[in-house]
Length: 288
Image 1 (tube, rainbow, N blue to C red):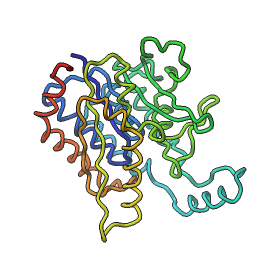
Image 2: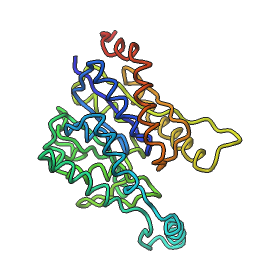
Image 3: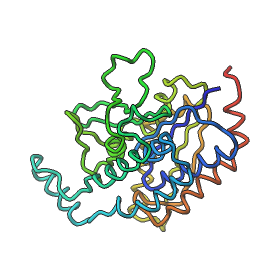
């Protein structure tokens, strides 16, 4: 039985995926293919390169504050300028270069430069914002898709995760060759269908519950709920194609709320542990 895992985007909450992977390993659930979008790609790529779930958590703690540090005033200025003049270059956004370099270095530790060098089958969606088209960064083009230009294997792994994680309005587009990439969640927030194309028998999807809104909610809480609603709506077909959907609740964690890294990791771990019997049953059952 070949098992695939698809990890949703969700900002800092993505570290919860490492907790889920740790719980799966503890229960001897072997992963044959992994895919992830946006922050899901950050975890999926590290796992595919051979980093353990706990060490992925350690890496997030080490690099997170540096990678998400943004001066909000220039961002507001940049948005204002962009709205007034479409020809103005985007200014003040996080370029994502720090993320790209960090992943480039982590890949080199494993002797990896591009996606095609990664040992475990991996899929990472991103969107070319100018072509309005989804592209898949992978080390294994699915059977029958050999002539499909939407699959890219020779992209540096740091560039791939930066492209998939370039959340609009926070990170600048990631330029690669003739492409201008933004967050994969624009079109595919949880890549179940692409994981299935890799020839697996079962797919476990991991996404995030949209937080409830009440009188204590702030602007970021509402923004995150909006993102979750849109992401889950976009991913309805993918989620319906999975064999089990593990939905992790992370208690109003903002997009870049690095102070909640520890709790998000625990949320993922204990959510998977709580539902492990159901997960095992779903992944073991024959299709009807």
